[in-house]
Image (cartoon, rainbow, N blue to C red; front, top):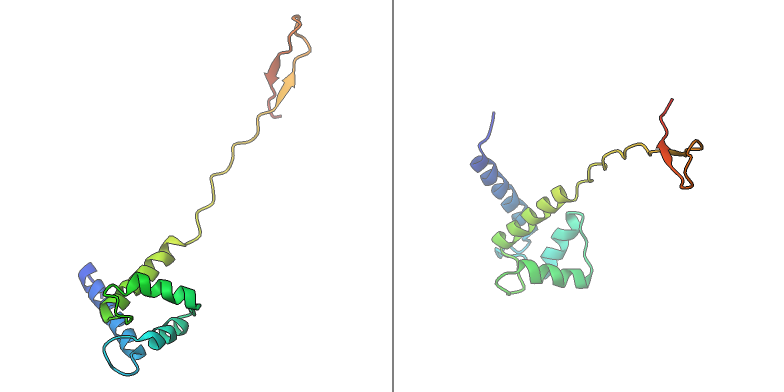
Length: 120
């Protein structure tokens, strides 16, 4: 079974909503501060007080100190995108072999000349 991009987006939105609902302990429709802290810790991201304030400042767009399902979805989607961006970088290209030079002793002039040394 294959999914279109629209179906995948809808499926992800539904999944995020199910996760949101599982953390909305009082079924208020929003995650209050303690519910959000619990959600973050349960998802492997416990936060300090300062980090928590930063989360609220960034994702609580209506500034009511609660996270709505839409704000939660934006937070989760941002986290998923960060994981992709934080994938290990590909190794740098191999450096070309060093070029070796040898002083030419057969030079009749007083200045030094150098010749490229070839590998055997």
